[in-house]
Structure formats: structure tokens, C-alpha cells
Length: 209
Image (cartoon, one colour):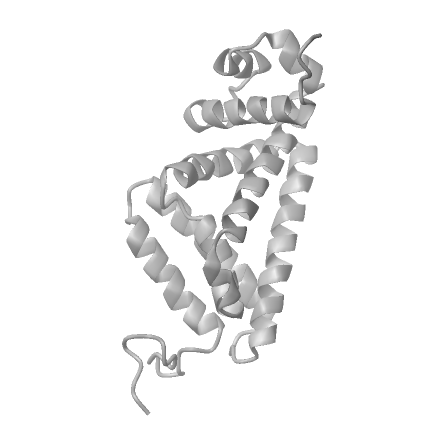
């Protein structure tokens, strides 16, 4: 009896190959043939699972999202309140280990590719909109921030994207990027006073009151 092939498993295998190729070549130069060679399969097999290159790109975004979600679910700090939830998500978007370095390189390539691909651009906007809404809701539920929640969420997402580029480019270290994120999280969640002093009892520089 022939071995049953899980279509989702096969598509994920191909999406993983796409991510590896995109991290080194960029997405504009990636072809179904390149992905097939990286995955060790025929180009016809790739075309069997993905009708177009854009279909494959959107599925690859699903794979990255699933990886991020799995890491979040395994992170115990997500039970420590709104700021911890937001921090856990945003740290997943920083290239602080090998997996996230690869994902970070691909994320940059995706943004460039989506500039001329409406289908992929729509998916990226949906993902960003969802993250921004979640972050804003967490900031709103904390009830201490001096910034409007939507603006604070937009600022944090933009900050993380910029930090990721700087880490990948070797301008700052991953540790510096995480420390910078933490400083902005304290401001967004109202744990820094108007004079710039930490107002968070958990922060090592916070004054004892």
C-alpha cells in the first residue's frame, strides 16, 4: 500500500525550503525551481502544492506565524500580565537566535517583495493590524500608559522592526536591542515618570518609595 503523504506536512517542508533560500537570495530572485532544489524535490512537485509563487509566499508567512505562536505558547512569562504578554510577542520578532535571524532576514525580503505583490501585501497588512490591535488592547488593559494605546502599539511595532534591521546589519547587539525594547515598554505601559525615572518597582533603577 502506498505511503500516505500529508499535504500540509509537504507544503510546510517546501515553505521551510523557501525561507532558507529567501534568507540568502532574497525573494525577488527566488523561483519554484530554487525551492525545489533546496527541498530535494522536483519543480513539478512544488507546482502541485503551490499554483503560483505568491501562493507559496503567503503559506510561508503562515509557517512563520505558526512558529512564533508556538514559541509564545511555550513562554511562561506570558502569564505575568499585559506588559509581559506584549514583551513576549515583540521579542519573538527580534533576531536574537539562529531561527529568528533567519526569520528576520526573510521578513525584510517579504516587505520588499510585497511592495509589488498585492496578495502578499494584503496578508502582511492583516498580520500587522492584528498585532497592533492586540498590543493596543494590552496597553489599554494595563491602564497606566501616558500614550494613546494605538499610537503606542504602532510605535512599539515600528521600533522592533527597526531594531531587527539594526541587529541584522551588525549596528547593535541583540542584547542592546532587547534592552532598548524594555525601555520603551516601560514608557508605553506607564512605568517611567515624566522626568524619565523608572517608576516600576521591578526595575533595578526604580526608586524605593
